[in-house]
Image (spheres, rainbow, N blue to C red):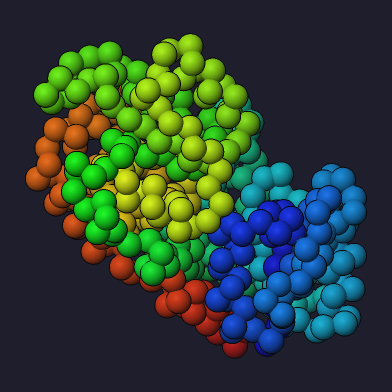
Length: 383
């Protein structure tokens, strides 16, 4: 069987080994061939894993729907793919191009809605506007889809149903493929005294990750006597990731004299190094405003690192507050209190770590990816 993906993930075309790359590494085993259409990028990787072929546009993003239509027809004439998937999100160039392609070749497709931009909370006006657009147009894009894939069971499904999407079409197919050979507890950092960091943050450095709130909370903790044994000046936050807020974050660290309290690690090239940083940390804090996951919290849980998380995405489905994770509001005072709750209570922290580790076993990489592939293939034979 053959598959086409329409995606906005240009990291793959650039040769970067991100989440989509690692998914395809296993996912490609279930298909004779996978073709992937991406937006324009200067670096162009055209083939990976032998049977995965990548086609990057040579046009500006505004023309992407036309490129998807033209290239999709061309690939279909040559390869006769059986089904295609559309990664759906604003400004909907994938959805529009995919809708045109379906109308032309009549091949079934899945609409994949990983999360709703701006929901439940928008990081800026653009995200708020995208949330409104999604509510207005997602029903149209989903109308002719064989199914609509969601990667959490509560938040996105509720939004789609309220927006008029047929509930029967919505299928929960997790997108969290945890490699337990990589993300696992390390005996080298099993005890608190061996931990290098009190807190770890991992993610793209954009406003909707709540990084500003975490920086402010770290500053407050550093300037109080909240930590035990007079350690208030030694609070240590590790930040991994890259993005447009990088310079702003570095300036904040300098201007607030937090050089000894915040280590800016930046982009981490390999998953092994990322797992090591998780294991070196007493807890992870993730304050996303809108997410399908977050995947990084699941990775941390697999390393027996307790998490503090906002109420987004898959977290709403799996976290039982103070049992396998701690929920937090988007308020600095609450963030400070929850961080201190865990840092001051070893027993609670250890219990959450153990329970969180058990929770994420359901996301074992190979089984989850096989389920994803089999669901696509099964849909071809359903009415």
